[in-house]
Image (cartoon, rainbow, N blue to C red):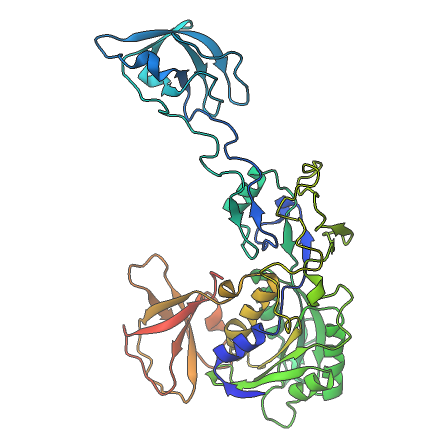
Length: 478
């Protein structure tokens, strides 16, 4: 077990013990922000045919090779082709086809001019400039060639990828499931929303901060409950969460006080603690562990054989056969018999894809974070969120937050024995990346996290002058 280690060491160790939680087929219309679980390869050329980029005329370049303002060439219009229509006859010597943007180039034609560069009537078009073969023709496959790998497992489905998948007729891609994160609050001083204020007790803010942060990151959450400072009660809630959840986050009870019993409760529930404490302020107190017991949930979370298995589940909970050769991701349309669409098609049965877990990965991570709100959320962004992103299916290099260099607008003169993460805001539009510290930085001060989008790291034993560059990482561009 590591004690008071660098937060990056704790983060990487925890990542090495988890894996994506599973795979499901989801309608493309509901896939924004999801993570692709299968390699996507183009099944056809995009565009699938030679087409026109303009409203204009298609003709043979050979017919106008001598055209000039002094000696224009007039061609007979023999066809009208609208977008979505097909050519009705070929273009031959001395003829042209009137066509609209996106319309197919007719047989025989090899050049296009837009309307505004011609003179025309209903029957004829006059061209006064020579053009080369291929002018203003968008050729089949110019955007995407058939067989091209569009993206691999671990890619975020954004607007561009969603449109690309739709362009290939893939309307039900295989994506990684959203991790279900169980949140537990501990502390006899905690008040819930339905309780009246009582002297000496405080409302539970960590629950809402953690659930909001998890859901904004793309996870689902469930609140397991609140436990007073009692090892047996906390262990019972952890055990309850382990039966249904993919990850568990507790806040409170991780320091060294008489009533700090969360680490002991984690062990009582069967969690193996890997890290106890971080060399970090705020967020020093904490316990980070993994559960690999037999009481994991029945969906097969994290089991190595779960990756590449034929049976998966869709959003309704019904099983789908996602890895059978020849099964289409196109709704209502089959692939050619025996032909695999790389999304939703078989890796060899039981064989993991390249983004799958290492053989020793697949446990349920359990995070015991500080009850102090700012310390809790600092540790969440520094350690917990990258681990959850791995469970979401992101490739390892995409689990980590974007690193930048920033200049603090004000000096930070306090020297700490451990590294300190300062909450602040960076203006992405600025030429020089400056970070404004957004209020107090104490363990209890949560308000300075509101509106923050970055953490600047002050190394142990150092003070930083105004405008001096320091390392930082972003928290709203994960």
